[in-house]
Length: 426
Image (cartoon, rainbow, N blue to C red; front, side, top):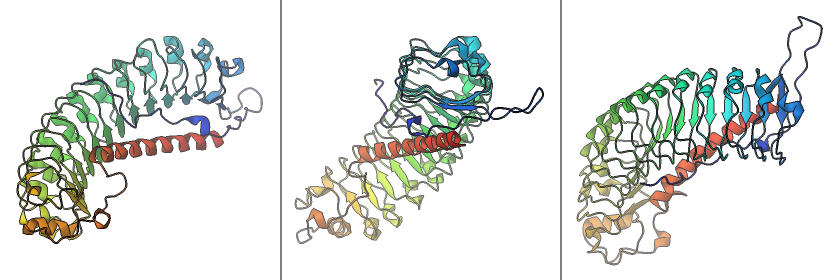
């Protein structure tokens, strides 16, 4: 599977929207006087080809927004940035990072964005010396093919975004990133995950779309705080039974894989309300799926499913089910109980052969579904306009998954940007 660009994995927070930060207060008094706050500088989107000398040599620099320029290098003078906490260099022309001694000097760094730069080399090991780092973002930089093992020092890291790069594997040292809450590694070339990812016990969102993953380690069962798991467009053939340990999972996206069977342990994911399994190799769904009483959206179109679980209709919370293009030739009687359903997509299944009037209907409403169950649709209304309407963004299963992913990432970006603006205004 090729390294497709992951939809929604855009360059991270563009600080150009941030208001120009006020200058930090200089320390007053003579020798021994307490130091004032550091300088906050905004040079974003000014078409700069190099940083102004007074910025490059600013010893009290604490925050720098230099994104959206034409910078080709970070000057060696930046070795004096021993107080710096935040650096935004995304959307420039950087061919790489400065020398190791410069990077080692940034001991207080907490947040850095290097996205969308034409790096000519991989990440240097000295970035591991940023022991206070909380957010590391580098998207759309193909030269990044590996993560240095020195990241074992990043125990404070909460956000890790490396999207649309050339990552082929994760080092075992990712197990030291014990504070992670959000991981986005879309659009890389990962074929497996190390068992050490089980140490991500605080992670709430994981995005691994558009990779080449063939399996998942049992240790993902330690992600008990995970609410959103996105692994679309990979090569997964199965899921570990430990997925049932994700008791706080709300959204599961597994479109465009090769999954042949869903483990019955999925029933232990009691909080899940959205499951996307489009375009896999499923021939059946486990009966235990019916135990997910909060499940509202179920997408299993473009599989090889021959029958739906008999008790599927006992879940009264279902809003939409998409089972298009399968091999379903009969429906369970329990579906007559889905009085609140907004749409049930069954096009492209043998069961619809006996209902030619309803075949053009994209999604059956409750009345139409009952007609199919009764085996007589000769009198039921077929006006699509009066039928069920899905929530916005769910017109197509793949589009829905993609939209949800983009929304999640945009929200993360907005949060980061708001935080940046707040810092700049302090």
